[in-house]
Amino acid sequence: MSYDIVIKDGFIFDGTGAPRVRGDVGITEGRVTAVGRVNHRDAGQTIDASGMHVAPGFIDLHTHYDAQIFWDPYCTLSGWHGITSVAIGNCGFGFAPVAPEMREYAMRSMVRVEAIPYDSMAQGMPWDWVTFPDYLDSLDRTPKAVNILPYVPIGPMLLQVLGVDDAKAGRMPSDEEHAELANLLREAMDAGGCGWSAQRLPSTGPAAVQRDWDGTPMPTDMMNDETARVLAKVLAERNQGVVQMTLTTDDIKHDLAHLEEIASISGRPLLHNVVQAFEDKPHVHKRQIEWLERCRERGIPVYGQGVTSDAGFTFTLEDWNLYDDSEAWMEACMGDKAARLAKFSDPARRQALKDNLPSTATAPIGTVTILSPRSEGTERYREMSVSQAAEVTGKHEVDVMLDIAVEDDLDTLFFVAPPQGNSDLLRDVVSYPHMLFGVSDGGAHTKFLTAGRYPTETLTQQVRDNQWLTYEEAHRRLSALPAQLAGFRDRGVIRQGCPADLVVYDPENLKVLPMEVVHDLPGGEWRRIQKASGYRNVIVNGEITIEDDAQTETYSGKLLRHGR
Image 1 (cartoon, rainbow, N blue to C red):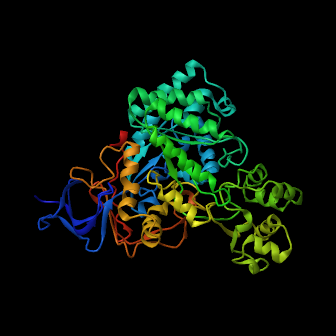
Image 2: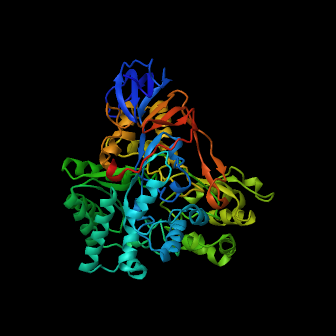
Image 3: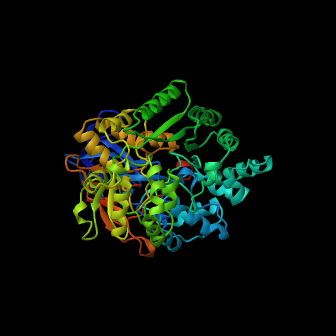
């Protein structure tokens, strides 16, 4: 038999958790056609994988590339880190169905809630759709170097059926409106949607970390429980699809019971976002894991998506928006640079900012590092923490942070760690065998987050260096588990007949590269990136998209309607 590509003499991890084997993989017409010992003499191309690991391509189920895919076929950072398939439309956020007169609103929402630059969306998206099926057709026409699995985001549906004011006020839909929402979901899933997604966070308080463009809740935040039940029944009648939900209210018992209810009504997997460790509240993630295990034992298909990267946030106060759990900070972090500068300079605001410190998305303000001051007067604080600078100056931590930022015209570069702090707490989340890796938010928070690096981080820090997991288990969690839960028909494993989505990497030399700032977004906008080193090849549907860490500009990715 002749092959298009033979990967020769590598250590093969098939994605199931089975022990590695040394051997070859043959690829023909986009599929794996042989695993074992393969005659490569008639191969169109032979990849020498001696000493390399050969694994299924990684699958990221939590991204926001809904806009970026139109100008970045590789969906970077994901495509640089071995990811061959991504799910978009997470959290109930997306761009369809969206009537022409609502396009501006949709883009402004994503500027605030996911920190995607407005000019990039306005110039980079073709906007040649109105309905969700039209949007999928546009994605189908768009060159892709990764596969795309689309959730149906509930936010645009709520706006279309209820209108902006009623959706954001949380008005209960009438029976007729619920029927219309259900029909929109059926139409979207008929076209290829893999299920539905919704963020349901409170309008105020510690969990209100993602707001709309005007500081008000997102439409899905105000969604009623009954609406979720109606949409869950659509999945049940089809015996198809998956639910992605972020649910946090002031009543944890209600939240857990409701998540179980939606999973039980639908009979389909529900992906619960997020499981994250907090150094000052270590009981939170432990209780979540205990609850997930109880669900598993009772046969309720609820699964956790864990924050498994220790990527922190590198930011300036010109662009920062992850202090929205504090009303005072949320209001201060709205507006353009001039507006923010005026607010942060205003002494009358300072006490409210001190009295209402943010506490959810990051470690405390005192732990923020003053990474790169921008003026002669602030240079002495370089590499100090805010608490150290406060001690030196005798000022309150909020005053010293804002005084430095204002003196630097809001160009001071800060760094803040994620809230888990202690690596042992992160290990708890990573080590739970049924936890999905990731929550990369790929495509979002482009000016301060690079969590799309997580597959490389998993294989280097958590497997190779810390030995929290075996390579076999890591590849199951990076590929087969997300494929199974999201409804991929035949991806996530290396098996004869399956699509050839594969990664070949050097385990000893694999690494995440330092952060860079690049100006590669439409509209001249910039972002922070981290590339990888050590990926010999990434193969998507049988074609090489990455070779020696570089893009080949081969666009072999597909829109996976219904996961296939």
